[in-house]
Image 1 (cartoon, rainbow, N blue to C red):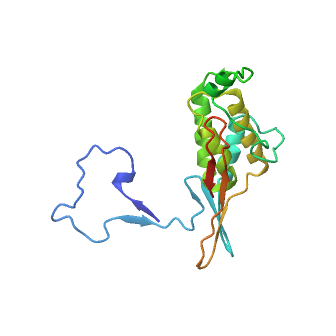
Image 2: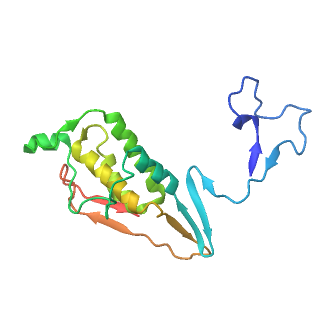
Image 3: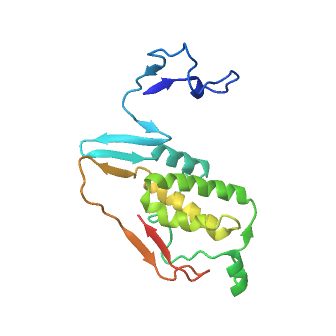
Length: 195
């Protein structure tokens, strides 16, 4: 349903009352429009099935692939290479790694990671790698950008994936837990993720 209301229709230059002044209280004050079955909400596509609903960001994913110029690329089979470790610029300097130089234009990288953070709303398979990349938002290295591009190549091959919400009552809660002891090469702390 959509409620026609002055508060939702742009800038107001009039005086706004949070409570109706006396004499203006009437029933049927707002016009309501039935928009039908929900199909899209904030870019999330809602597909109804007999067994439940599927939420995905397929259109958003395809626009992201096109925006970064990877429409013609070969899809990746995983979002991140096996045993790939992301390290900070400071860590690299400390241990003497020089081949992975720091890059400029951090704003474009931050914007890309922001888009991936939004995409993972309906893509639990992206949680770990996007979370790992989001920890390196202040200083950008080539390996971070390469990893972000690999995620987009992975999305290209799986753009229709989403979250399935099963119909009916549920009396059990299922959670998946992943922990990698001392996986962070920078701090030797473990990464933990609850999916």
